[in-house]
Structures are given as structure tokens and as C-alpha cells.
Length: 440
Image 1 (cartoon, rainbow, N blue to C red):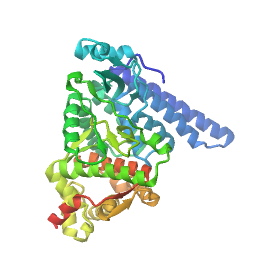
Image 2: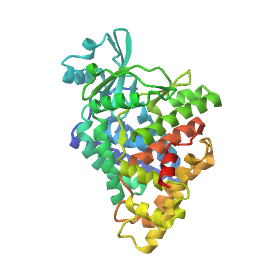
Image 3: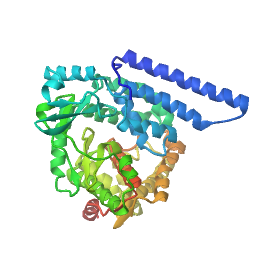
Image 4: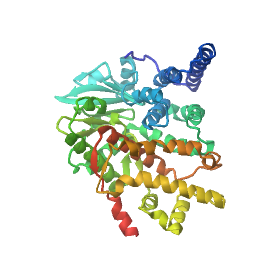
């Protein structure tokens, strides 16, 4: 993969790149409709592939927030055409890397010398590159290390990038402006945190220590002396990414074992720590021959206020909607229902949320759950049609639901997706059930 020797850092440059990409997409549509007029063929798949390739190429060169949004969208299977999901998924671990001179420049900014002076060995080529940073392999005193280096200018371009991608995301998802503002404000907060590698260092050490007793999880050791605001150094973990692991055709027993480890990891974080590794895409895990799982990225962590946690998970109690007064009160407290709602809107939204909550909470309330169940995931993916075709939701003048739920829902969706790809059968009796018993 060709390396980049420059980053578009100014708002003017980045906006210009988006305009150029828009022109390419426009030409793709023109070719598509011209061909349709002449031949009568309507090759939507070919159009999607051309557009996905052009948009991804632009985002991968810009990197940062724009590419991160593409990565997030690739996880939301069923919301985008397959061509877009497949292409955008590359942002998880195979974006075009930066050239070595730019890596040296970053090191000198924080350590006043290049990586060659700090480490015994340091790979000039990156071994992985994603949306916000890339990873190089190094060694020091016989220890094999992974060094994550943030792309220059990423932290300073978050706000302007989100303004640029806002109309694109709104159009692709058919999202109302009020809902989009609500969503992107939370995304901006998490992205700002994600570009602070000192914060990631602290959280990595804290959460890995708090989850150390979960059998089968492996965490790297972190090295503050070789870390800075835009550089993070940790032990090198061996292992395969999910697609490589699945290509080895692991047994169902191994799939179930690994699925259980990942489920227990998230259950412990959410229901004990009240904070969670909120970026559960396959690129953040390493699957190992001995059936253990390495966790290598704590850049995106969501902390849950206690009041939100208790209300939200009480709302997911089985048959909670049977008590209409309690169900309605919780929906109001969490802003799923608004004071301005008319009677017919209240009844409509209650019915929608009842179905959604039952579906998303279903894995919690049986001794075990088979995430290979395609019918279940077809139901989940069809939720996007419910939201996009619901006129009352689309015409809403205000966003619904607490911001704290955005990354929690995304975390569960990512978790479910990984377990579905594993085709794992998992014991899912969750710690959340204790909350329900206390609150009953």
C-alpha cells in the first residue's frame, strides 16, 4: 500500500478534497444514468462500488474524524449498501500509512529525537494503519513493542471535519437535523478524547487492571516513558484479526470459548465498571492460537453516569411495557418521549420503543444465546428500515433519547456483530439481571 508523504491539515485543504470527491461522485452518477438511457441497464451495484471507492480514497487520505465516521458506518451492517460497508471496513486496520519522515517529525515534536534514538529497533514501515493513527513495531531491551503514532493535525480538525461530513451522513442515513446534531455532538466528545493518547494510556492501564481476572483476556503492558500526547507505546501482542482467524476454520468449541471471553469482558465493564471500551470493531482484538483474546485499543471509552445506567437498564427489563405507567415514566425520564409530544405520538413511540428494546435485550434473558441465528440479525438490520421509514421520527423537531445511550447502543451492536461473525453460542445471563431484581 502506497505511503502518504503529506496530510491535508487546513480546513481549506480538507474542504477542497471533499469538493473534489463530490465532483467524482457526480460524474459516476452521470455515467450511470447515461448508460441507463442508452442501454436500459440499471447497474446499481457498479455505481455503489465506484462511489464507495472514490469516497473511501478521499477519506483515507484525509484520515482523522472523517475516516473514523466511515469506520463507524461500516460496523452498522444493513444501514449501507454492501459496497460501502466492505470498503469502509478497511478503515479498521488497513488505511494508507504515513511515510517515515512524518513519523520522525512527530517523534521529534515530543522527544526531541527520532524513534531510532529511543528504541533498539524501529520499523520504518507501519504494520497497521487505521483512521486516527498507525502502528510500528519496535524493540527495547529485548522486549517487542507496538508504537502507535497519531496522524498530524487529526486532533485540530475534528470540529471542521464533522461539519463537512454532516450533510453526507444526513443524506446517506436520511437522519433529521435535530437527531444528527444530537449524535455528532457525542461523537465529537469521544473523538476529542480518542486523540488524547495520555488519556488513553491512563484508561488502558485502569481498565486492563480492572479486567485482569477475566480468564482468557490478554492485555499489553504500557510504557509511559515512551508515550506522549500523540504517541503510545505498549507490548507487542501476537494474534490474528478476526477475518484471518476465521479463515483457519476454528472449531465450534473454540468459537464459543472466544465468544464467551468477549461477552464477559463487556458485561464486566458495563455492569461493574460503568465504563466501556466503546469501539468494538474487529481491528481492536487479536485472536490467539491458545483460545485467548488480546485487547489492544482503549482510545474510545464511554463512562456512564449512575442515574442513566439504572434508568436505561431498568427500561430493558423483560415485559417492562406491561406496566404502562412505569414504562411511560422511564421513557420520559430518558427523553425518548418529550413534553411536546401529542397523544398519538406518545402511543406511536411507545410501540416503537417496546419492539426495539425487546429485540436488543433478547440475548440477556435466557441462559445462553446463539449469535449464529441469522433470523435474529435480520430483525436487527431491519431496524434501520423502521427508523428511516417512520415519518413521525423523521419529522421530529428535537432529538430523542439521552446522549449517553448513543455509544452504549453502538457498543452492543458492535459486540453482537463480532459474536455473529464468530457464530458463537454464549452464556449470556448478565449481571444486569441483578439490577432488575433489585428494582422490581
